[in-house]
Amino acid sequence: MLVFPNCKINIGLNILSKRTDGFHNIETLLYPVPWTDILEIIPSDYEEFKFEGIQIECSLHDNLCYKAYQIIKEDYRLPPIQLFLYKNIPNGAGLGGGSADAAFTLMTLNQLFSLQIDETKLMQYASKIGSDCAFFIKNNPAFAIEKGDVFSESQIILKGYYLLIVKPPVHISTAEAYNRIKPRMPEVPLNALLNRPVSEWHSLIRNDFETPVFAAFPELSEVKKRLYEMAVYASMSGSGSALYGLFDEKIDYQKEFPNDICWMKRL
Image (tube, rainbow, N blue to C red):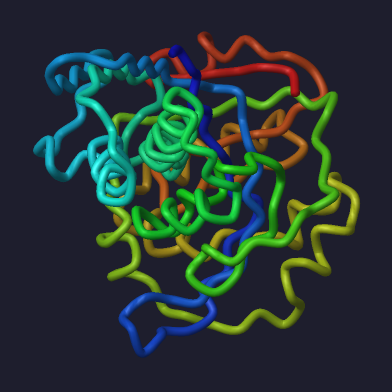
């Protein structure tokens, strides 16, 4: 079975407080984006996991697709599988590509082997793998709170805008980004600001990771400045290092960002 795990962007990201369990309480809007990896799973007589495309720098046992398979295998009798993943979505970018791959692995196993696991249970499995992993089970715009794993549906629609994602040659781990952050409570909750027109988001909606990450990697700040020369709204996604812009018209991104990984599509 062949599927295409997509990524996401964060529209606004407030780090509210440090939790007693070591995580942080946040608020953010997760918005699905049709930039995809390629995932194939087939029944087999032996287990095989193959990864191509952008290199995944972790052991097999730490790979999120492998973890998803093992989680399902604990509760259901699964045969061995061959899993092939071709990575297009950059790692360490704040786009949730690895979480999407894991969520799609769960959904594909469920369908391929007729396990009849309902959506709620799939989201529970996904939450064990990563905070934003469960988002990709429904794969609709969602407002996320607590660890980023409690979701409510959002009516935000970006249809008609051109979305450009720019990934400079910088890798930022989520743990590294959180180590640099200072939690704060915003004057106005993010959910209230998202109701304002997109043309007003520039002065209202921020990603708290940008201040410490831009201090460490000033080249990312320069990318955002260049995006805002043309974009209606621009931001870093998640904990970085990918940045994105929303545009009224298509731009020549290859000319503007020739040394970076870029993806653009009309939503």
